[in-house]
Length: 502
Image 1 (cartoon, one colour):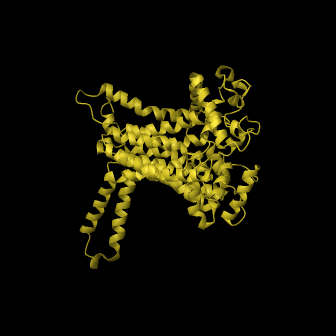
Image 2: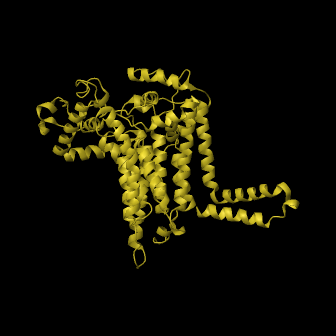
Image 3: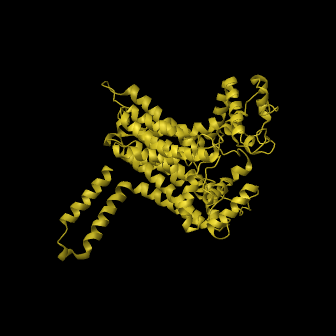
């Protein structure tokens, strides 16, 4: 980062001008360090203040909810730690993360690392906004600081980091890969591919991001780096796919894509219009769409047509049958499918936080008032026993006041409203259009704007769950730092110079 290099140069000059060691003694290094610290505070003071506040809030979460908050998916991840094998529903990346921390035998350590990853994500956003391209292309300090505020200070982001789920790790990996993707260093290309592969093996929704980053290099005329990125990403993905095939004799990274897409289409699928063959009719729901439950109930509810099929829900036969049904529904009712996707996506930009998809899931994203009880479902009960092995002791969540109460009060006020996120997403294209229309006459700048890759990644992360599964509040948060980074980069001095008064 040019600013950091300048700070190091100033420190070196200070050392060179300092008196000889015999006369200066031990006072030389503290003085240099103090001077460098003062310069850093002067140049990055607002960001450091936000970072400090974010750190304090995370310390409050560690003090108020000990050692962690639990989610139904948590127990599946923990089982995979002790029985390493691919899961049919979720890739094993987060379980590998838990395995790395297992020697500590502490879920408190896991949440501490996740909070550090959240802070690191905020730092990545700020640094990426300030270091991209030439000086004229960098975001102003105030814009870079504002871009980091949601990931550092949003109460729901902090709560997500305290949950034992994969999203915090996924967010960090994606932001790290996208940030590296916007640098000009060829040596980072393989690292970008590996980071994105790790993200995909943490949450499969990250798969389109590999194409986004490779396409970014192609737009910049860097065909060979795009190939290196794809190769670096494919190696671990193919290796994991081979492991999955050896376990289940099925091609893929998970075995539930058809089931999830089937559940998505049940929000509009009309079998009278589809006229499915006899083997697909068993998956029909005679109720009109407006009287049907949320999409995910068709995967987990006991009375779901798919769940009532022989064998477990995610057998190869059931998943393929669900995929065929979904394909027929989408091709027969493409406009209904598009409207359904837009309806789910629209929930992202609502001002409030309506309860969705149900009160149970919604409640997991709030700091609780009372200590959660033991898991109720049988698979989670099995996972809870393995969690005790991981912790080497009792598990649960202890709520400690007044720290927990302070966090609940903070969460009631400190969040990024949906319309604000929509406005953040609109900033880059609006600024770009304004710059194109009002710029001075001359040769257009070659290449794609720096904000395009984080903006595209943010849009992909918002649209993909709505198109392939269902809206969920925690699916929104990984897209937020990328959207904010894109907005900050679009406000670079180079672009603002094209707008009168910018």
